[in-house]
Image (cartoon, rainbow, N blue to C red; front, side, top):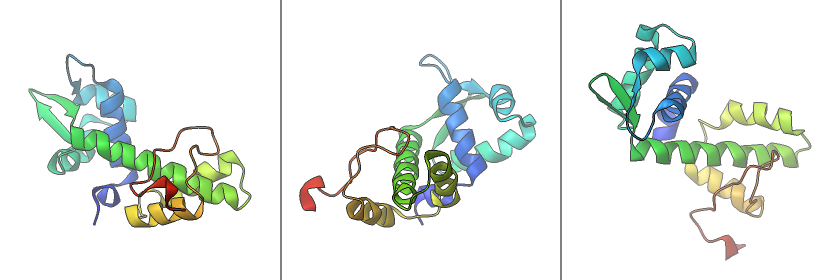
Length: 143
């Protein structure tokens, strides 16, 4: 199972909170992560610990920082979500509906499936919201 498929929605939100709150000089405290997520610190820790075990977050002296693997995983998530949005957009859903529908599957679909959807969709460069979609791992000229 791929790393992204192992995450819960709340763990993904926790990873995004760490990225959004850390600074180049220092990590982010558990208290701050909990506040962003609107959770108690023990609940936030319950979502943060699996991220650390997967190597997506590193904690040092009570501060959390996203790792390179964590950044790559968030990039993969954005790609999965945006490709899923283009799929639902091609079915006639509007931008708000595409986002909601994509959230239902974006953590569950494999990289292989995302690449296949991308190929069938003729390698879209942006999602229905105009956000960029990173290129496939396979050549864009293969189609």
